[in-house]
Every structure is written in structure tokens, then in C-alpha cells.
Length: 250
Image 1 (cartoon, one colour):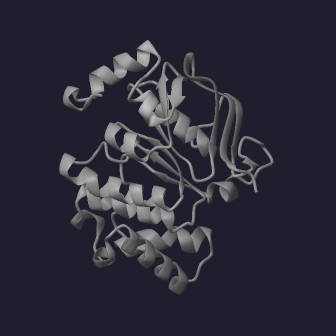
Image 2 (spheres, rainbow, N blue to C red; image 1 turned 120 degrees about the vertical axis):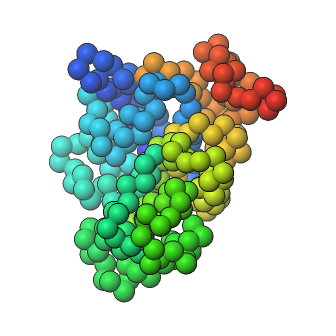
Image 3 (tube, rainbow, N blue to C red; image 1 turned 60 degrees about the vertical axis):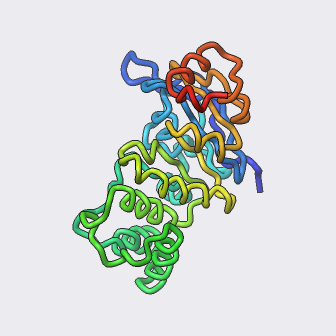
């Protein structure tokens, strides 16, 4: 079993004449938490979406858990089952209860029975602290609760890796902590995670490695203490000076 969970090699992506990602090489090891930071428009979300081919790369290779997703012969639907993704918006089915939101894909995609899918769903609702909301409708939940349901839904598919695309950016500030708490717990349990985030404190405390992206490329990467605490590149320093509260700067 390889220690490399995600491997990107020569990854590029253009939308028409606009080059959004250029020649990215990246390996994420099994159990590693990598946080991706950078300004809007730097290619962070596109990078994440290329990992499970929600965006098809213009060039390069993408492999997850030893399977090359960019190989035309790969069963893409089968490979994607092992990749959980949580977006800025919660994307819950508004006409289904919380429990139904967690069981529908298990039953249709994984072929689990009603009993098994509900058991798995309830375990994951418990993990995100929302056991009592199983019968609620999404509209009855706060944004933070809906995002935790979205995480539980992704976990119910037994993913090998979790992708998070700015999962707290649509939330009121007081709701952010609960979602980050769930993500911290997943990291502690050894889940491989690739996280696009503006939450610098989370990146400092939880990430094994931080990538700073700008202009479609990885400008700098390394342990959080180096990239956030003592960046080498001028572009990284300029970005962090803007986003970090001066009182919390080292």
C-alpha cells in the first residue's frame, strides 16, 4: 500500500485563454493534512476540483490512492467513491430529512441496505455532534449545523481522503468553530485531508503542511510554522500581512 494518497503531476488547467493552474506537482501522504492558502483567483478551488475531476485538467495526471483518475480507462465513478468533498455551500437536498440526506447515496451508489445505511449515518451524525437532528429538515438547521451534516454525509461514504473547499466561508463567525472542531477531530483520527481555507489559526494548528498559491502555481510550501510564521517568499509575506490580524502575528 503506497504512502502517497494524492499525486498531481504536471497538472495544468485553462478556461479558454485563461490559465488557472500551471504545471503543478504535489504529493499528499496518507494521513497528512495539507492546507492551501492564497488570494482569491489563485487557483486553490480549481486545484481541489481537479483532484476528483469535477474539473478535467487540461494537462497532467491526477492519482488518488494509487488509481490514476485521468486515465480514460479508469472507472471514474468507482474511484470518486473514495473521495469525500465538502463545499462552501452545503448542497443538502432540501426536501429530504437529515438522515435521508446521509443515506441516499449510500444506498444508490454503495448498494447498502436501509438498515446499514441508517446505522452508518447515525454514527456519523454522532461524530459531528448532531444525533438529535436526524429527523430535522435542512431548513430547520443553522448554517454551521448544515455544514456539519454535509461533512457527516461525505464521511458516510467511507472516503479515503477528504477535500474541503473553504468549508467555513459561508458561515457566520460564531458558527465557524463547531465546523473546524469536527475537522480537527478528523485530522486527529488520521484522515487524509486537503483543505482550502482562509482560517489561518486552523492551518497553523492542524496542518502538517501549508501550501501558498498565487497565479496558478505553488509559490511556497512547508510546515505551518515556516510558511505562516516565517515565510521565505515576498509574495507570501505580502499576502499574510493583509490577512493576519496584526495582534496575532509572530
